[in-house]
Image 1 (cartoon, one colour):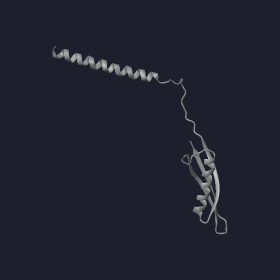
Image 2: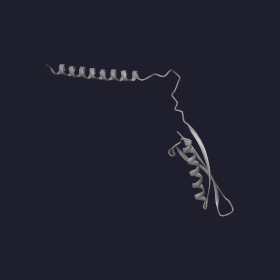
Image 3: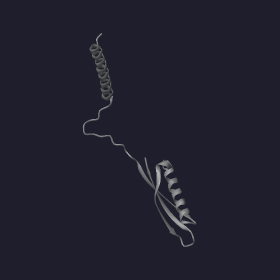
Image 4: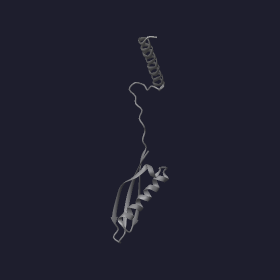
Length: 109
């Protein structure tokens, strides 16, 4: 076998292997379900807001108390705590050395 024959044989083997790879890729790409033209897949997101109120001897403890109530309300409604976060809180002095707070928890899945 001459050198040029051996090079042609290698080139042919490489071309056949490349064709097989391309055909295999086309077959797997063709197996994916096609969506109609002009449509897109959109993931739906569920969101909810829960509120809670609480009191405490300090502003921080009043917010913590209100947030715990709001998170408990969310969990009773079927949400996991990891799906929610504290979005807002409001603290006011009650005048007797105590603080009253309202907390809002936002949940999304």
